[in-house]
Image (cartoon, rainbow, N blue to C red; front, side, top):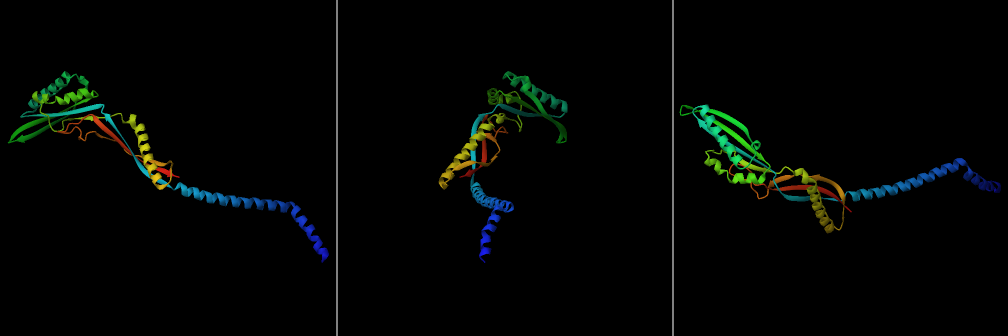
Length: 251
């Protein structure tokens, strides 16, 4: 019995010094450490993922007043007569009156162009008649000159030109791309200010942008007029507006 017990230290020594055993123990140790580290990282990752879900969605607004850089004035007029030649001759006289009107105001001849013509034949009390309708359009970047022309448009009536429905001037702002970056930045800044107020009220702070959506740019009349239609006087003073939707992380 004593001899058997004396062999135990020797067996243990052989077990610990056996190369295969030592490699197995080393591998087991590495695996154990890996499991411990993996569990920690997984738990910490879940915490980070939970934190990453904390966000706030806000909208930011940017507005800017601009002055239109393009004026488009469409003049519609017509003449009726028992025969086509007479009706056409009357329209031709009106066309020359319109050209003279804009020429006297200093507009280049190329800025005024015919943009449509229509001939209608009908019977009135059994008498055949013809109506010729025509449109001429002024397209100019001289905004002040165009405004002055509109203020004097009744002179066309004095010259015998009867303005029809569909006549009117419209002012357009064409340089939107030049101000888009600054306005998007301003809208985003406005959105961050709203997010910071929300974060302050909830005891958190605002982090980076999670996602963002740029809204449509809208150009409207600054003073609320409808713009250029029959009986409506458009102005070159416009308001550009954009709303962005931004998701901010909270931390």
